[in-house]
Image (cartoon, rainbow, N blue to C red):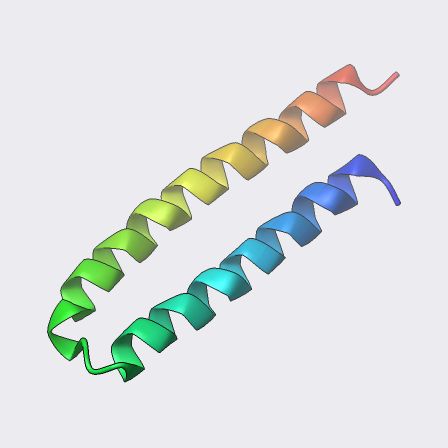
Length: 64
C-alpha cells in the first residue's frame, strides 16, 4: 500500500469516527448543542482538508 493510500484511508476513518461521535452526542439528548457540533464539524473539515492536501503534496513532491 502506498503512503498516499494511507493518508486517504486515515482521513476516511477519522471522518467516520467523527460522524459516529457527533451522532452519539446528539442522540444522548444534547440537541441544544447542535450548533456547537456543526461548528466543530466545519473546523474539522477545514483542518482535515488542509492536512490531507499538505501530506499528499509532500508525498508527490518528494516522490523520486
